[in-house]
Length: 160
Image (cartoon, rainbow, N blue to C red; front, side, top):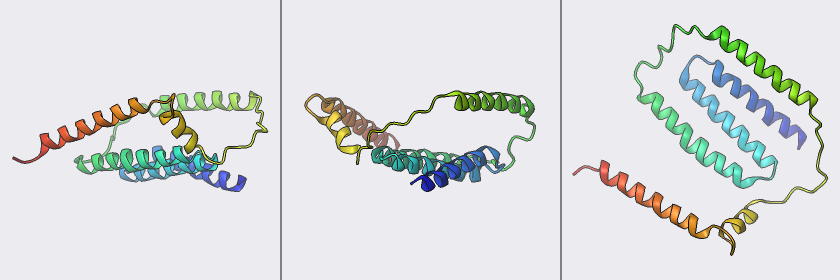
C-alpha cells in the first residue's frame, strides 16, 4: 500500500509540475488530467471511494473536457505569451512559499491514528444525505432546479 502511495504521489507531483512547465497549453491540459487522476488514486488509497468517483466524474470528465474544448476553440493558441516579464518575481514568490511549506512540514508534529479505516464511505454519506435527519428534500430540490436549467438551456439553443 505504501509503494502504491509513493508511485501515485510522485506521478501527481511530476504531472503538476509539467502542467505549469510545458509550453504547449494542450499538453498542459493533458498533464492536468493525469494530475486529477492521481488525486483520485490517493482518494482510493484513503478508502474514500465516493470522493474518487466525484474527482473522476467532475474534474476529469467535465472540467478537463471543458478546458480542452476551450483550447480547441481558441484561435492562435500556439503563439502563446511571448513577452512575460514576471518570471523573476514569480520565481521569488514560489521559492518563498515553498520554503514556508517546507518549514511547516518539518516543524509539525505528525501523529498517526490507530483507529482502523472504514471499509467504505459511501453508505455513511448516503445515510447523512438521505437519512431521517438528512438533506433529502434539499438534494431533491437542487436536482429539480438543475433539470429546469438544463431544459431551459436546450430550449434556448435549439433551432427553430
